[in-house]
Amino acid sequence: DPDTTAAIEAQSGTPVTYADLTRPIRGDDPAFVIAAGTEKERVIGHAAAADTAARLAARTGVDYESRTHAHGPADSEAAVLELLVAATAGAALVAPQERAESFEDELADQWVTHLFVGSPGAPRFDDGIPEDLAAMVFVDVQPEPGYEDLL
Image (cartoon, rainbow, N blue to C red):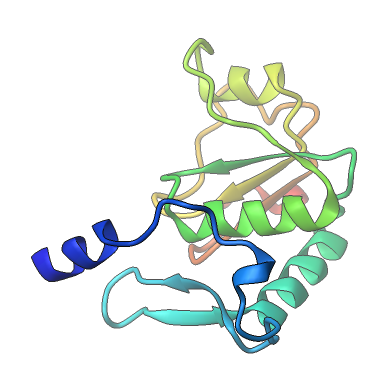
């Protein structure tokens, strides 16, 4: 939309700080919007995002020693959830590596402990599940057979 583009370009490039806030951030203020089509649009508030991240971190064992990775597009729900959970728990986020021969090698080389899986679904592990992988978190997709030990 040209009008939206023009409005954004007219804004200052200076970062927004807490001093710029007109009021404190509230728990129901939007933290992010999931817009995967008009039928799935959802606004997630700060309190709900923090609560979900803390519960999922506790349930899957993500902590400051964990290394997380999202399988799928960077703008997917899985990637957003990975970021929230890892940041809440103090875990390391592992970025995709182009030098690995396979996805299994990438996870093993980077000591990934928690894999967040969204669309297009779970990767195939032809040579077995990497040793360090402790849990797979399926986001908006059905878990596939063979991963029961990691759910």
